[in-house]
Length: 81
Image 1 (spheres, rainbow, N blue to C red):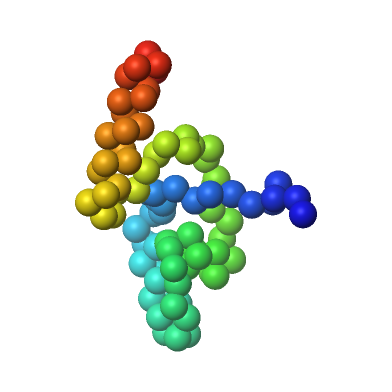
Image 2 (cartoon, one colour):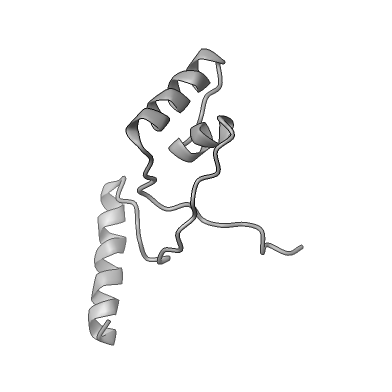
């Protein structure tokens, strides 16, 4: 099965404050639990602009994520990137 239609959303997701606020309040009023900002904005019929990013743009959430980020940075430094 082709996975060409799939993409990986990275952080941060950026929207104008008013649009995001309205989208989140609208989802809440409808009893819809959204998993991220883009989903809330899409529910309002908007189409967020996708910007290509790097796969090594990690989201640091847990302490072990720092170890992974350090490994990426070390590898990039060794490769001269």
